[in-house]
Length: 263
Image (cartoon, rainbow, N blue to C red; front, side, top):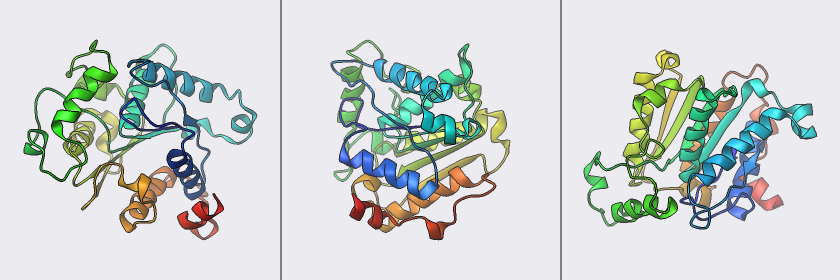
């Protein structure tokens, strides 16, 4: 299940950028991809996006769609998303682990996630370096805007608590960060806290951190043919398929440029 980014207030599962990415991910990984359309702020402030993602996961688990009931393996469900979508899938996984209706999730794929907080983790979160796509001031203003001022910057949905992280029942997680991204240290901290807090993270392969040198937030969406984008895609594909008994041979999968040419 893939949840798009866009700062909780822009983009769509139906836009060309995310539809092409979802198609490419499905083809490269040999996986069914459910791309989630959720309500956007400010018309629908957070937590509306979280509620919609949870409803989508319940729909997936119900196997009410013939395509899913015929071909999906619910025992290998992954939640994936980038930017705000990475935040949403993390919170969806927390809800899946702690709610009365438990839904089994094998893994999380969290790319350039939007997490923040009052305390600054590094100098890049204090002052803009003149290069990064997002300034710390812009990120500071985003959360109050998309929540209509109802949630503070240390709310656990944007600044995860260790006890919530420890409650996760998935078995693996991949976090991807970009070297020039102002949010990079939040992703690194999430991966580190996963290793420290989660019992299932004792396996050295349970938590994967992928760092893209020389890149900024969301680069892979807008330049999918770039070498670093291909490396990130391959890292995600390998992560999803590493426990698959019979993964699709890479030779049978189309390259990204072939998919875009068909589009």
